[in-house]
Image 1 (spheres, rainbow, N blue to C red):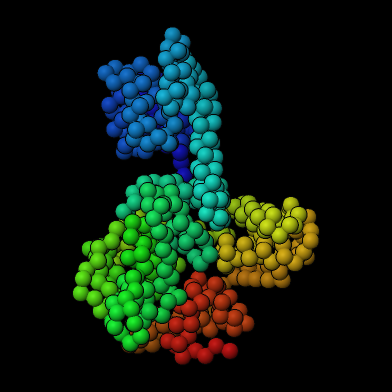
Image 2 (cartoon, rainbow, N blue to C red):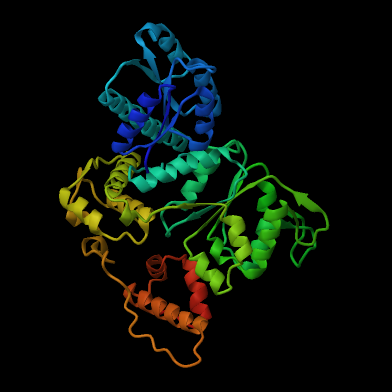
Length: 460
């Protein structure tokens, strides 16, 4: 992700020269030649850093600085000033400017300042999230891979828009629930409830009552009224995980709720209105599900207002090592152990391994090793057998054999045949371990069990 820099200076030649120089260094750069134009660009361009001339016609630099901080206090501003204005520039720092540069200056000075400021922004973001995580006693989002830095940028923006529906996509174990927590706790809804519902783990006949609640005598066994999770989350956030597992009937009811923000309890007549933000997540291919008519297209567009994609751990490079070191330090502290480092051979294995369970699997491996060994450094012999042997290897795929096309064979039937073969091969490679097979297939254990029932495939 390119960092965005805005230059506000009425000296057109200077501003244009800085723009081209910073672009050559890999930044995304725009210019504005007046304070008013600059403020418009701040709103539209959303820069990380602004180089702002202190002396501007009409709206002066100090006033523009104040307005920028009103728009977004997290935007860093470096003042550009002549020596005679140094005292005023120092005053600007008291108003929130990061620093100032005296004119004339060389491009190298601008480049050094930009790098310094932008590195400080990244560090500040990581520190802030870490502090929030410590308050909640949960694992922080850790990583410097460009894909994760982009995710963190999106989270910061979306946290300010508390009514926007977000769809988080990614494989099992990549941290979708963890990201939903950040969106909640970094938003103005942080003091209200965060409610998580796993649509793939709750049987279909219970999910409606869990979401919407029910009135007394609504059905056999309903001896008293019960509030649903949507009602309990009023003012806060509802996180619907594995949204792709919703039944057709529940999809209709969820769509109606999203459109109206009102619902009725099962057996009830009164409409209940709630103010909740809805965040959803899935590891499913919803676009294919739409084509197969198992997922409603109108619901998809209602949920997919802003999508966030979490990359699989195997695509995050050295973040794997950073996360592993964090987990080992964390578990060592909790268990009174002294695991301080990973051998180079272990690091190589970790980087080669596919991590089908993603961050969740890495965390479990770190916990297991910390429990079993009293060591200061993790060596290759301490790793679980499947990690040492590279199961499943990064280059490995599940062979299906030849698919036979027959006249009159529908696409739906063909896709079911392929899915059935994938499931059978995954179970075979996983030794009929449903949990591991589900991880290999990128779905929940409950979802795999439903497909085993659908295809009459008796495990074991």
